[in-house]
Amino acid sequence: MKILLTGPPGAGKGSQSERLVKEFGLTSISTGEMFREAYKNNEKLGIEAMKYINKGELVDDDITNEIVRKRLSKKDAESRFLLDGYPRTVAQAKALDQMLSDMNSSLDAVIKIVVDKQVILERMVGRRVCKQCGQTYHLSFKPPKVEGVCDKCGGTLHQRPDDQLESVLNRLEIYESKTKPLIDYYDSRGIFRSVNGDQSFDEVYAAIKKALEDVI
Ligand code: AP5
Ligand code: MG
Image (cartoon, rainbow, N blue to C red; front, top):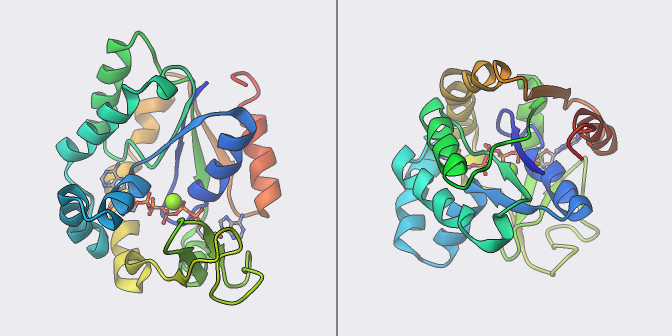
């Protein structure tokens, strides 16, 4: 099972990916998470990438393709993985095709989580993330048991720097111009499906599972 979750920033890719990965034993490959992890570990790649991320810009295609290439070459990504937020440009999609074809492999399904702008803004403003383990919360829709403290590891919750309004608006614009064209790219192959992301966490999850019925 090799799937890609796409959709605008704040659509719920990370939230849904967490459950899919657990239930189906998939390897999670999120380029956003990989960049944040590299930054946390003070790696050059992370420090460089964060300059773009904080402004809401995309990280360079070559850099992004390279970290995915390395991750896909590991044993645990051989046959079961979930890509979250990669590819995000047609150039990245072509690079991914090449990587997979080199491994005699291909994507089974591409799921887009559809959410409109107003809902996205509400989700981004209220999102809080654990500094230590990266677990995601929402002040209204998924609050932690104790304010400001991660339920999972006790770490401190903070707002992602790229969740400031200016950066979010930039990310939305970039999504429209650079990432949306991927829909046609994958639709022409018959592997594209979209689900309504403006429902409860459980309802979105059920819709994704239904859309994946033939590949599960
Ligand atoms: P990335 O971390 O992937 O950010 P993103 O795509 O903008 O998506 P988000 O993580 O912000 O949102 P999400 O869809 O995961 O939503 P979530 O589940 O958290 O990338 C960050 C940056 O890295 C990019 O901007 C770019 O700079 C760089 N980058 C990454 N990949 C790249 C690539 N391939 N190429 C170049 N650059 C790249 O949910 C959001 C909030 O809503 C949460 O608070 C959650 O609790 C809440 N929520 C979710 N679902 C629901 C629901 N159903 N009901 C109520 N609340 C909900
Ligand atoms: Mg995410």
